[in-house]
Image (cartoon, helix red, strand yellow):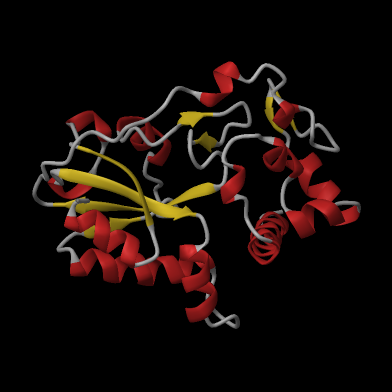
Length: 218
């Protein structure tokens, strides 16, 4: 049977991706003894968000802060978020939690969920749990010879040099209807985790939020 804490996380609509006992070099605050990374994979969190949010004021970050904060309090934990300032090293924590690998796009890739997941919070516990280490398969990109994710972008925004954000944003503003309606083509080209691909409403929401945030940052 799954650990009761993991079951509670799933009941709240979140996916528990991995966990670890932090060391000093992990920069985990409050002297926490145990960390669980949670977020979205599949439709559960999105459905809860779509059902509960107020479109006039609730960004996904704002909603997540409330929902994950309530979950943390129920579990006698504290929630911290990728959008906190200064930022916490979530991708480093993901390596420690056995929650995925770095993909050629620079995004975290999970052997089961592919690129169709996101870390939304870390739950910090004052006590350690006796949970078996998460099982993580081999890095899926190492056996992917064609790497279609690197050639699918219409403006070649992804390359060994990194992510060309201005080129991506310029495309989305002008000729990026396909990306805006169905999601990032580079992400969609990845063969891993296709069962967890975002549906149209979720894809459009994330693409719109991404574009608006980038335009506002100009």
